[in-house]
Image 1 (cartoon, rainbow, N blue to C red):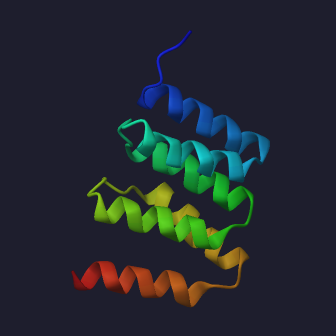
Image 2 (cartoon, helix red, strand yellow):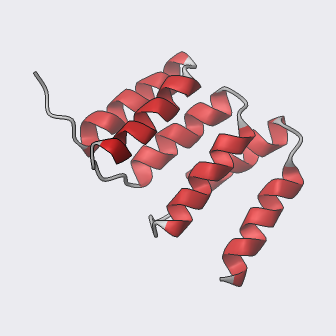
Length: 105
């Protein structure tokens, strides 16, 4: 039996990204909330990357917004992945809107 902690979830979510299993990555992300497991930039980075792999712009932006609301430090790779997911979904304006909201607060 293994301990379900941030490191374990990060590894599992990253594995989902590598396999193209974006739905499972999101399920694991939300499971961290149910189990009160802390999320960090690596957790979000892996989940947003999985969304990019699956060309899922909406969950990508939702996760980026969660990071901002939760005051999780964002890095360039995470933001770039969310923007790339928006590009794949032809949703540039949504990404721009989110970044404007963040700048205004």
